[in-house]
Amino acid sequence: MSKRKKASIVVISSLCTLSLLLMIMYIQGFIPFGNDKSLASMDAHIQYIDLYAYLKDVILGKNNFSYTFSNVLGGSSFAIFSYYLSSPINLLVIFFSKDNLRTFFDIAVVIKLVLAALSCSYFFAETFKEKINSNLKYAMTIVLSVSYALCQYNIAQSSNIMWLDGVYMLPLMLLFIHKIVIGESKGWKLAK
Image 1 (tube, rainbow, N blue to C red):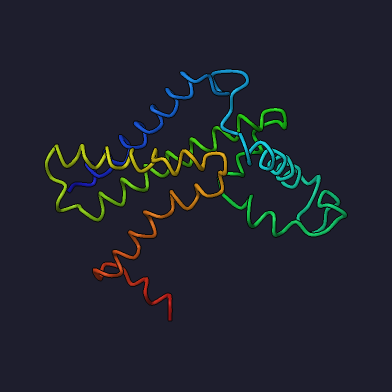
Image 2 (image 1 turned 60 degrees about the horizontal axis):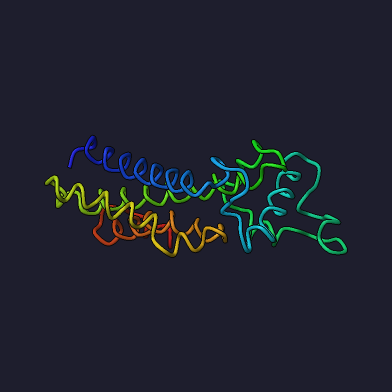
C-alpha cells in the first residue's frame, strides 16, 4: 500500500469520527453548540472539573504538586496528578478559563476519540498493508477504525476521561509488538 493511501485512511477515519461526534453533540445540544449539556457528568462533574481548575493553577504557578493546602489538610498532590491529570491533552486546559472547563472537558473527549480512530486506522494500515488493496477493504478499514473510536466502552468512559488515553494508545502498542514479532523492529533490545 502506498504512503498516500495509508495517509488517506488515517485522515478519513479521523475526519469521519470528528464529524460524527460533532454532529451528535450538535443534535443533543452539548456545550460547544448548546449552553447547559456537557459530557462532564457523574465523576467528571464531581471530580474532574475541579481537578482541571487545580491543574490550570499549577501550570500558571499559582499552586504546585509538591505541597498544597488544596489537598485536605495539606500535602503532596503528585499522586492525584499521576492518576488523573498526566494526560498530555490536559495541557490544553491553559487555553480555557475556569468558567469554561466543561467546554474543555467536552473538547478533550472529542480529541481523545479522534486520536483513537487515528491510531486504530494507522494500526490497520501498517499491519495489513499488503492485504488492503481493494476499495472494499479500504472502506472496511475506515469503518472499523471509526467503530473502534465510537464503541460503547469509549462512550461510557467519556465521563471518566482518564481511561480514554489507553484507548488511543492501545493500537500503537499493538503495532509496536507486532513489528517486534515479525522482525521489523529491534524494540526488544530495549528490554535487555
